[in-house]
Length: 440
Ligand SMILES: Cc1ncc(COP(=O)(O)O)c(C=O)c1O
Image (cartoon, rainbow, N blue to C red):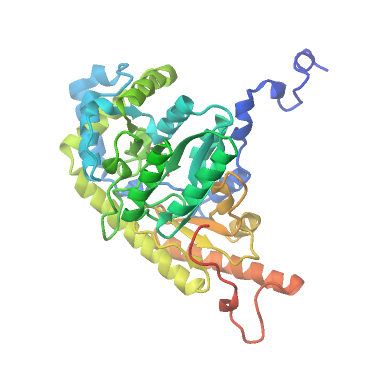
């Protein structure tokens, strides 16, 4: 045994420090499908897996002009450290963005973060003790759950239907968590154009969910990256517009401008805002001055609302293409019909397992994210998240056609070997016990 190995006897040949990691890193295991996604990024594969915005729809000169101007007029500030809370002018501009979703607030309660992902991290660091419960929709945003688990929280999934989180189910879950003597720290929710489910919490339910949270002293963490990317109709106003003391709101420029800047923000009640600033300083000293000033300049000089309209048009066309291809190639399955955002949630026949099927899909040159990625407890095998944000409409059609080939192939196999798949004797696949169009 090497000296290193003997010093760290709980290590192994691959990682001599294996036994030294903090317990909270247990939740940081690489996803089982990660290796496959490396293959899926080959150009011949149609990837319906990632949530990458279509940044090519952004006129390059808009961003270049903003960058040049920042360097010409504010170069030394852009290249310097800045405030841990973020650039004041940009904080004020986020108020204009949030006003579009009915939110009124003060720039002094905004904290700029390195993407909303980092706000999720800071918020979790402030609130989660090991063993605490975080309530989230089932399914929920995969990388939020990675953070919650890395702070050793237990994630409790509350079911949704086509109108979002089900209030009655939330009440029941809260009661049973409390009865088990556990501490609920917050409700994490993506009420608008949910990732991954593609559904939106109805207006009536927004009030009800907030009432339930208030009655039970549960803080609400509203994550809203997609709210401005609606198709025909504006979604209901943000939860934060209805309640300011009990809601921490997260916004981002990643989907309405570009994720490469890594700029997001939190709007929080004063006391929480103070702690968020301290946590931000401790983690990164300050958010990128350069990125913040470029975005601020862009918001000043460009028609950013017009640009968001352009994105809306791009994504609406892609969503419609995806839904019409699903109708054509997989008419017996069910899926959600998002009214904005990036994602469709597909429900497979119950005999199929989305995770087990993925390698065969990649072999057929189509990639998706299996539903299991979006549950902390291994649920979701019967679901697939399909992203329509990045591939062109033509590729989306090709991708769905390939997916149909894979699904039908799986069903044929099951039928041949177990007699449980495709029903023969004149019956169509419509005779599956098709699940209702919900996520529960
Ligand atoms: C629901 C949700 N929250 C947060 C994020 C992170 O976004 P950002 O780029 O602002 O860190 C994403 C990105 O896809 C998301 O879908």
